[in-house]
Length: 161
Image 1 (cartoon, rainbow, N blue to C red):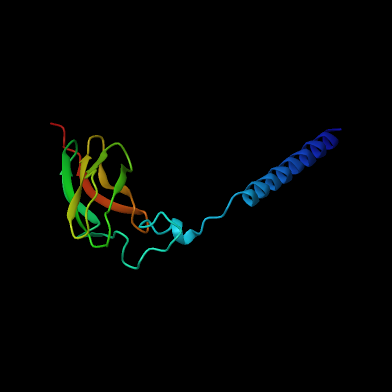
Image 2: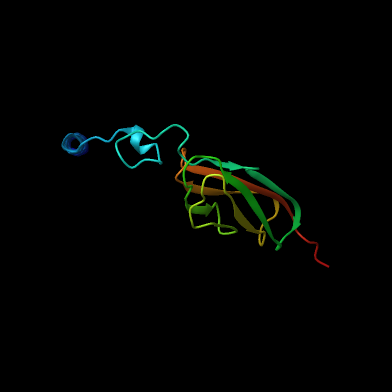
């Protein structure tokens, strides 16, 4: 009896899965397709291809920084410097630290071609110890659209007296 119930449930699940896959296909057939060339080129919002070199390019002086040895509870800051070496305005839409202890800040206005800017990162070592590595993920209108910056440190726990 248990086998019969299991087979009934299993066959119903398979049919439900197959039906849901079929409806996805119909939805896609009714929607006009958008070329991935247009989606992947942030310099254009039309169906025309962008000129080569017209996209913004975020060129960093360095993408990793090691604070070295710091004392637990210390807050340290580093500025990642970059230049827009592309041919159009660069926009950072978001910057997210890998944890609450890593807080980035950045320019909210467009960075013109040839202009430089920075992403400031504050790391709070409270509650951390040993070798620590954290990241900041930037979302931009560059291609690729994400850039990951890395900070690291060796956090020393002070001896109690």
